[in-house]
Length: 106
Image 1 (cartoon, helix red, strand yellow):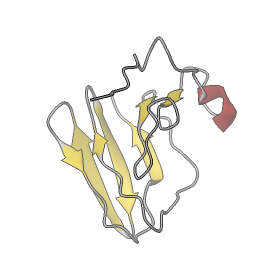
Image 2: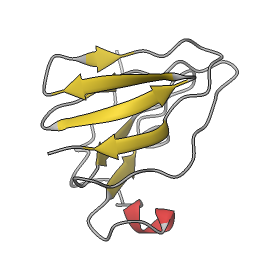
Image 3: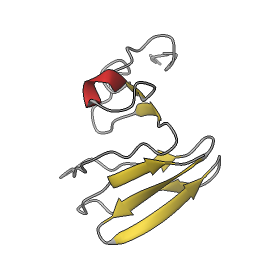
């Protein structure tokens, strides 16, 4: 059975500077590198206090967010969701506006 193996930190370009935000924002997209067809995967390191100024939606693709370390908040429609450290994750409903005002915590 074929598989694809990539190191998110070493094998993927850091696209964080494309977002005109904090210089230490780290954003690595693995979707193409892993050959994903129905889902996407990104690695993000959001610096404390940084807030994404916009949100986005998907018509078909679901998203899952897992906070590995630290904390953050995300706005899903009109609700603010608090996320903390490993083991706490979120899967916003498929057709809602998500990630409006994602803010990195300590």
